Length: 356
Image 1 (cartoon, rainbow, N blue to C red):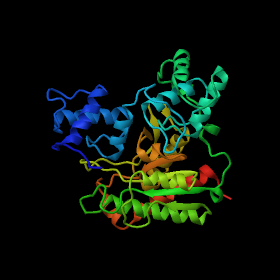
Image 2 (spheres, one colour):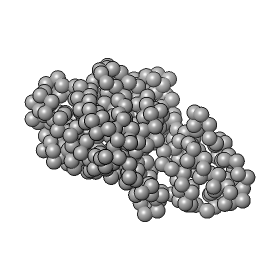
Image 3 (cartoon, helix red, strand yellow):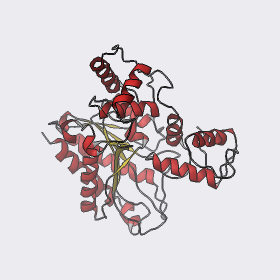
Image 4 (cartoon, rainbow, N blue to C red):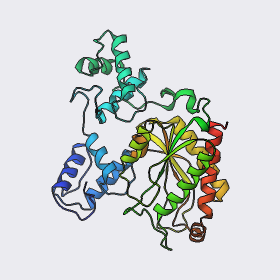
């Protein structure tokens, strides 16, 4: 798709503006005029922030998909399990309501998958409805009566991950782990003052982590092993195809302020739902990197990034440092940091899954 940003004009911008306005975002005095001005950028930023996306004011693939899916209202269409699956705000509302009622619809990701279908079937059976997995008016009307209309639930009311987010006795030698080196090819990612690209540092960390995991007996799949372009949605699809136990995406943070420092990690979170296993791993990983690489620790954060939402297994995004931070040029040039970061991540995974 064409990336849309400030200064662009055309039918694509009109489409984005129309969708934003229908969702209640203010487009200022100019309204839907086909020009990507300051008011449109502000509306995009507000939409991104409210949906846990990277808030950059740009319409790229992840933001566009979320914008389209946000337009579906409950009851607008018949929902059921199919390939490709139904996706959208109506599916998300269904999942949240079913989870609130104790029917485990799985991660509240807005994707109608097998777990959501099983929850629908259980709800229909317990409610005396036709047990066919079809979400029609009869299902929605009954859900509306017995829930709070999709009102966000508290952490205490959330359906917990199995084993409270723990790995459940698996060991590394029985695990399949997909490692995703962020960016690649024409997509350099952030670039520091010395010209070091995020795509190269991410690959260096990912490659070292892969070798350590393979030495421990794990099956490792890399989404890229060289400087190549990998489409955003192909990355989680690779993990799903591999039936992975864990997905780790490696990126580097950046800032216009060179004083910005710290290790960060992200887990899936969306409108009240979060991945407990993801949060446990993200917290442990940033703490380990901070200690091993002598950088500040940033609290793990829940986000609705595509690689976190689309994966069917526990997933985390890790940013071991600010590539633009003071003093990082020398550490990145001799790969000392890449070695420290990969060892820190490996030590957490070894403890989480256990060794032979």
